[in-house]
Image (tube, rainbow, N blue to C red; front, top):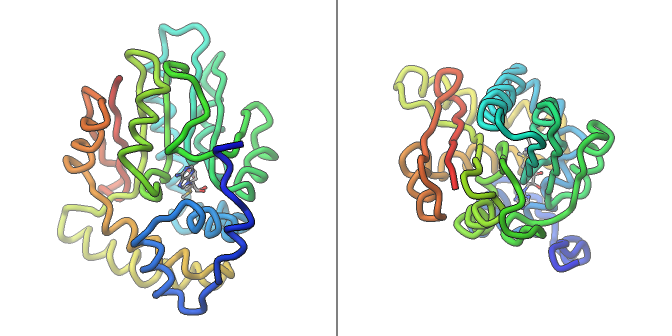
Length: 256
Ligand SMILES: C[S@@+](CC[C@H](N)C(=O)[O-])C[C@H]1O[C@@H](n2cnc3c(N)ncnc32)[C@H](O)[C@@H]1O
């Protein structure tokens, strides 16, 4: 399958010992192969760390995305939803709770998808990459992505693929971490996100560089109006954002 990331290439990549240097190198390329390798490695501990490190608030963020989708889809009899960068399927699972929906999840990492398939048997999970979605034009009413677009090797291409597979009037719903704009909250957040979180995470995962990469990838990713411009350049309209939980996460919404 054209979309499948070559596992052999992935194995050929040397696993560096220096986590911070590896994180910098990954940040520079965001190569699909290396991103896949990182998520394959963190897959066994991803859910636990995600829920512990966010103090369980990540459920609420995904619940907000579900509520937004529910409203957007209320006049559609059988909505079709695509969750890109679905990982272990938590957002896909939340969205599958919307009545009569058919949810499809897609991700680079087969190890993440294996967990997703066990967790949500109602959702179809496929291996693939955002930059070349294996679907026809105008297939979905909603395309979502939770904490995924930041890792795309080619963000404009990925978002234009979201736009292509959406039906006219369809909705994109994207959640990302946010760097709080309030200086006091920002100060506390930086201490937690830059120092405490990576050290704690390293106690539980062998892929420690993933948690050096995380704060760097958030810090260097466009947020608020800057990200809206990228959505508009990908063809979207009515793009807006909703900060959540003291601006520690953000939901972007836009229409085709
Ligand atoms: C932080 S996890 C998020 C998983 C899930 N959406 C959640 O809310 O917890 C990011 C996921 O994005 C996937 N990913 C990154 N780049 C991708 C791309 N270009 N195409 C498809 N999946 C991608 C990774 O494999 C990983 O599983």
